[in-house]
Length: 128
Image 1 (cartoon, rainbow, N blue to C red):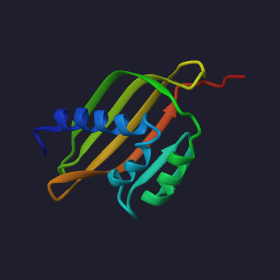
Image 2 (cartoon, one colour):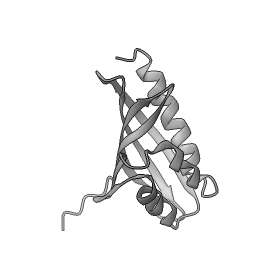
Image 3 (cartoon, one colour):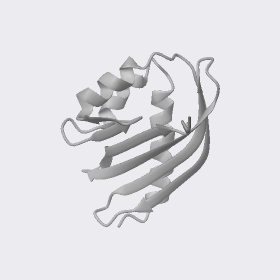
Image 4 (cartoon, rainbow, N blue to C red):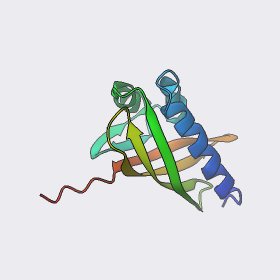
């Protein structure tokens, strides 16, 4: 297990959201995913592979994100990977702010990591 899992988790989250939150930088997120073996579930929509994931991320139309990270919880995995759960709040453009949760599984690849699993959900409860 990687003893640096907390630092790896926090560093990954900082870098990920720095790229994601800037529409001009968002296409660079492709480097964080594996061409074939990365999976993303975005609000229930399942995608596999870096190209499909990036098609979704670059199709998002908002230009401005105001994000507050409440907590980053990381755990080491027995294969050297890192499990990360992020809790926070975000506001896209002029929409009202919403709570969100995002979970990442990082897998080791050489001297770095790639995001093998990514699950994103807004904290909106439709109880009607």
